[in-house]
Length: 297
Image (cartoon, rainbow, N blue to C red; front, side, top):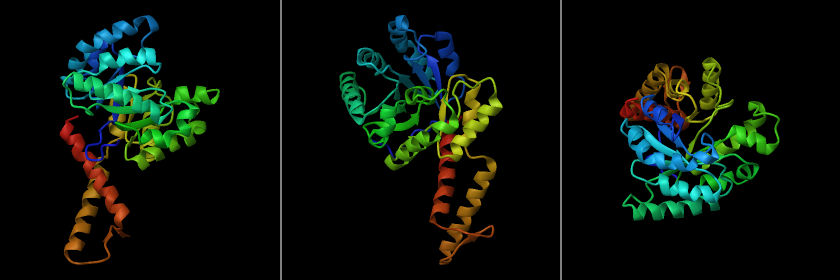
């Protein structure tokens, strides 16, 4: 269930192989809102056990820098269960769940995680889920998935989704309606929509990546994933209000509050009438500004 009181600030989530100690140490210094210690795609089949074993040392390294620590587990149950045994430990704030195609899957994982939290003296319900929808079935079930237990953020996984849909390649134009369905489900459920058009693998052309990230924000997303440290500052900037937005929001709210204090029913700012949706957007800008400032990143 969504945490409307304390939604995550996930402008940038940086993937790092859990067993790559050198990269884990550096990842903690990259300024990402969260680091995802990966047990899935970046780990070969014969390296899964070693990656799980590495979590106990990797989690405190990342947590020491103040960012969130997430772990991406594998989808098949025979891999997922030992992944959860290794990942539900102190310092982990979230689990990144790939190829989620039903709410029932989330319910089962929630039960396992809850049992482990209780056994290990952790706050039951404290670990939140970041959900990856990467299949046609997942898209068809996305509204129910977004309302599942512990879901805090949700995104469409373009590469896997394109393959499952039979697309020749993850073309942003072709994937746009499916990604829009995920964002709509996120807003309906009150969870954070994540993602941007284009490929997460685009780190050689950071200008192109910046345009993709900014397009994601214009579409209503609040953050996205990165596979290279150079992508982190791009995401942090793209999904944060700039100085002009902040100044406009502050001025608009000051005008609105002054008009209310004077008992005026109609309020104008910079030649335009102000109504509730405009005020709400301005307040959200300042909330995001304050949350970024509080994180100190």
